Image (cartoon, rainbow, N blue to C red; front, side):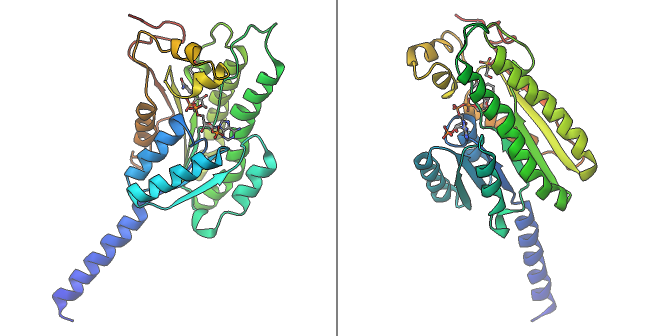
Length: 273
Ligand code: NDP
Ligand code: 8X3
């Protein structure tokens, strides 16, 4: 091998090495719909490997297939309920070695159930929101953050909401759950700052996903009326923001990003035509 061949060989090897190190493993909860699905598409489009989760197994497997075929990335679909501590612990506990180096955790799975005054609400709706939006996010963080701490690197992104910044009529418990996400995000950042782990909250305003359909128990007309007369955010707008915060230099972190439709000024002020 000539000196020139050796140099070329070295150049190609180091380029491949650098490229391999740029590929991240991204863990996204609630990837079967809405933001989570769009976030998965966005990271896959940029060549990153994904662990995607949700309870709807068929949707999860279909998405995995689509990501692999379209973007040629590696995808591990994990079907579990974030509310079930044992399911979360088992899913993370049995991750194959190659999937344990998680660079980014996106705590996205969440929901609003109902929109009722505090004295009339369905108590089970409260349980679902608190168990999913708060406890599910905590369980995920509890089991994944030690893997990041051990490697002295990682980025946890919590999907909060404008509902975690302002309370609106009949938003009571949903708002409470998102205020909790806001506080937990700040607390997580304090606890993990000495371990070189970034912690970000993305707090969107109104976005047209399955969110309102779930909130209004499948009532499509009521769900559609939430987005009448103005242009809401799309799931892809939110995915762009999530991806963006992961592209900054290692010494820069976005702590909190509130993302709204232009027609929305705050939780209750929406300019409708
Ligand atoms: P969608 O209803 O479209 O998607 C919610 C996702 O969460 C689904 O993939 C669902 O999957 C998953 N999920 C729900 N419950 C569980 C559970 N117990 N275990 C595992 N996965 C679960 O809603 P969005 O994409 O709009 O919402 C995503 C996040 O964004 C939520 O935290 C929501 O509060 C927040 N948000 C939404 C806004 C909006 O206007 N749309 C604005 C601001 C914040 P599956 O059913 O398969 O389990
Ligand atoms: C979802 C946005 O305003 O419906 O978090 O609560 S809102």
